[in-house]
Image 1 (cartoon, rainbow, N blue to C red):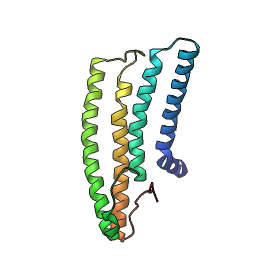
Image 2 (cartoon, one colour):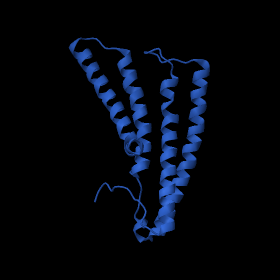
Image 3 (spheres, one colour):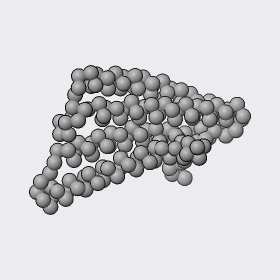
Image 4 (cartoon, rainbow, N blue to C red):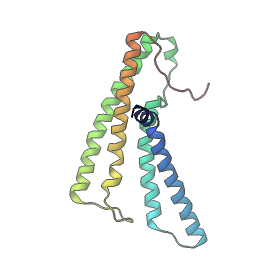
Length: 171
């Protein structure tokens, strides 16, 4: 059971991103063939690709938080001690957690309004709530990853260890 939970913790976002990215590629690919090969296109293909992309983006936010792969300017970080870096990262994580919780609250409110009034998508005619749920789902996952990051950084701060800085893009 521990192995399964560890695999989910390490790869959940990657698996979900793969599913949604594959869905986008297959849907757009089939729509291109249908449009140019069969001179026929559907409205559902565009909607599926659009909503899959929305899920892809919000899950990608959580993946970037987990791997500390978001864009940052870290010129001053090289002059700080390991404890100083940990404090800066902790401050950033707490600010981002506050913003994520605020966004989670408002996105949940929007989702509940959609459920209350029973709004549906234009082409697929299915409840819009399935797609509006992407934002609270993504921010819930982001909050979870931020809490993990805060706990990891707090342990590094207390232990005087170098803080996890993520992968560098251009080294």
